[in-house]
Amino acid sequence: MKTPNPYIPTKALLRTIFKMSEDNYLFQFTVEPGTIGRCMPGQFLEVWIPGVGECPISVCSDSMDGLIELCVHRTGRVTDALFKMEEGDWLGLRGPYGTGYPVEKMEGNNIILVAGGLGIAPIRSLLQYILHRRERFGDLIIAYGMRHSLDLLFRHEMTSLYSRNDMHLFIGAEEVDFPEIPPIHAQLGRVTDMLRMAQFDGTYLAAVCGPPVMYPFVIRELKEGGITENNIFLSLERHMKCAIGKCGHCFVGGVYACKEGPVFPLEDLRFIPEVVECVNC
Ligand SMILES: Cc1cc2nc3c(=O)[nH]c(=O)nc-3n(C[C@H](O)[C@H](O)[C@H](O)COP(=O)(O)OP(=O)(O)OC[C@H]3O[C@@H](n4cnc5c(N)ncnc54)[C@H](O)[C@@H]3O)c2cc1C
Ligand code: FES
Image (cartoon, rainbow, N blue to C red; front, top):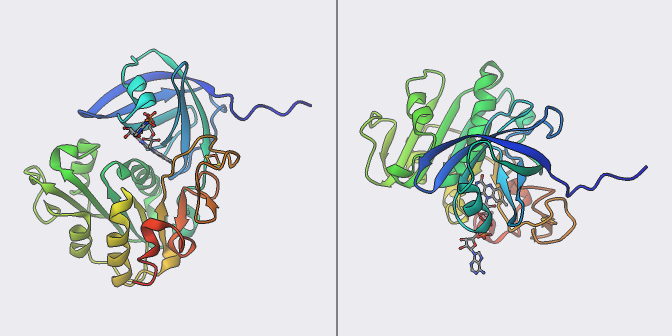
């Protein structure tokens, strides 16, 4: 029997577009049930726009079969073309790919989620996963940092979380604060300042996603708080092409980020430039 071509995408209907900020939109797609499998938090899809190309984008919700949400920052060729599409248009999706956050290991434990900027996309998927199964997890903390409060993504959802009594939310921006959120939950400051406000200890597992520049600082805070390297999980976004471990574009520090990652425990990242200085910190 002929092996199916792994590069052929599934046809996806662009159902809804939400503008979250000037250059960050939430796109909702539907695909035929069963064509794109269950997307776990931290996994990604390849988005294909005919005549333009492909790029990897993280799933940003605890997806149901057939419905897919992607939070996209307009940055280059493919994302620019996606931003020009309209509801009712079609494109291609393939995946899901990669390892997600280790939700089974996380069950029964206290969890701290750490997001910087667009890193909230896969972290939101994990957050929804946990909230949909809240009784299976222990204490829950979210530390979410961004440059400007106007960059707060999923604003309505995020600002409504602070009133929940089963989790602790810390949102920080480097410029301007958030008048709609009480200061105990949202302040001027970086994500590391938010981590210092949060009370966690070595009983927590941490899931982190954000720009590489934030990783050493975040890792230092998490380790100072008592979390060990095997309980810190980072998403590493590398330049990717095939997404299935064939082309070598994402090969870094001895691993294929597309296949063995993008989520790794810190203890496996001793040779990755953005975290190496922190392995012994
Ligand atoms: C696992 C994974 C998950 C991801 N998840 C998300 C997500 O959820 N949301 C999201 O928005 N993004 C996500 N990304 C990032 C996204 O895949 C990249 O931003 C991707 O490059 C966008 O494709 P593009 O064609 O629009 O941009 P590209 O055209 O590839 O441009 C990307 C960047 O490179 C620069 N660039 C392009 N060509 C050149 C050149 N010739 N010389 C110099 N600079 C150049 C551009 O200015 C831009 O800053 C993810 C990436 C990975 C690996
Ligand atoms: S993207 Fe081709 S090997 Fe990872």
